[in-house]
Image (cartoon, rainbow, N blue to C red; front, top):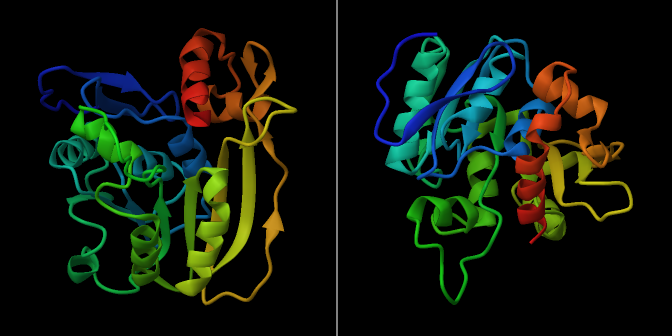
Length: 265
């Protein structure tokens, strides 16, 4: 782990995989389970070029770096988060492969070029901008609400950046699934794989992972659902392996239960 300067209120957390570390702060939106699942769900080539939009502090590029030797770009519109993402690449000695860029996904193609990426991933804001009160913390508001980009903006940007035959992977809320599939087809991304994520068996899905292929042929596969909690106080085996290499996740249950509750709201 390389030395990097920490700003006020920042800390270094353990990503619990491949000895990766990540700079975070309670003043900005921290990564959550949806980013971790996207990093595992997305199909990545052994080498090539990968782009992560709405990258935040760069957690998805960090996780993807353990699965591919590809060069990975991350784009984040918020200056503070983009700076954290750049320092996270340095912290983990990955600045040669992870390229973090501050920019607007709606116009970043003018800098990165059209159709330059084998895979594009994105964990976008889930909620429309509310008519009433918004979160007074601008970082939290931008992470949760479509302040800087709409769902259509996100999918249009993915379509501009991915190569023909390349893949686009997204995590979102199941309530937007019809919108996602409709917009993907509108922008010539054919939905190919879908996986629903449920907190517990018998409960409705609270996340959906979806992957499409640019200019692909129509055919979609619905993968087996992921049930987060196999028992009341423990992750399922798949998540234990993703997060902890199979070790028990009991120490983290209260924090993650609160996170899952918030996702369902």
